[in-house]
Length: 257
Image (cartoon, rainbow, N blue to C red; front, top):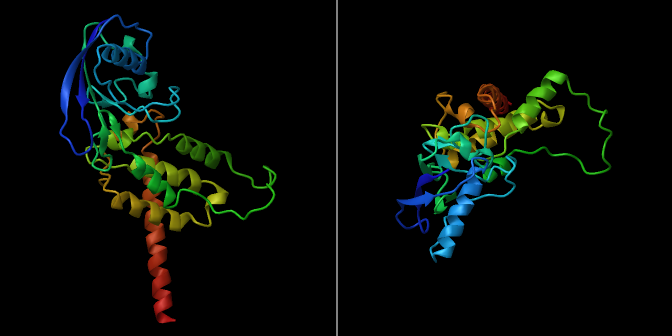
């Protein structure tokens, strides 16, 4: 299969970028999108040209680093698929394919298709954890978790932090990511002691990082390679309202005491 690629090239965060056209020829239909990019980079290297910079790691749809906007769609045209799992048979032979980095204010371009997604790490650091006393590990059966809660928690925990939700959102919101990280802990008994503090801290940090607000367009759940439901955002909003109400009541009680 043969393709024409129009790829965003940018030398660094402080330099202007542009779309550059490349030919990808003799590509196997069974090749993944990243393998096709490898072939193009090998050809560029042999010609003495700078290869295209892009992030990758596991290439098994687990790490979330293969963040590319392909033909205007986060991770490409296939639903529930990361870029590394997208095969070239999904495109027509001879097609022209546009390849760009995530276009989100909170994800500055580092080089070419690589963006800095450390804002997501900082959101998790703000509260995406549980505080547990140190000591010997407890038996797994000591804390019983209802199946419904366990299923909801596991579905939310499937998030791989790729940032596709923010890239697909018209507002550049990472609410689906933040909600997934909040929800999977909020559904478990171990996450209850810090539940309200967690949601307030993580939502505040989401906004401070420059992500937009959620207006429920729903593009995020369509782009998510793990098909995480937008229902998690409703769960997050519910907890946030409960947390802010509890905080106001606590302040009022303290003021009258």
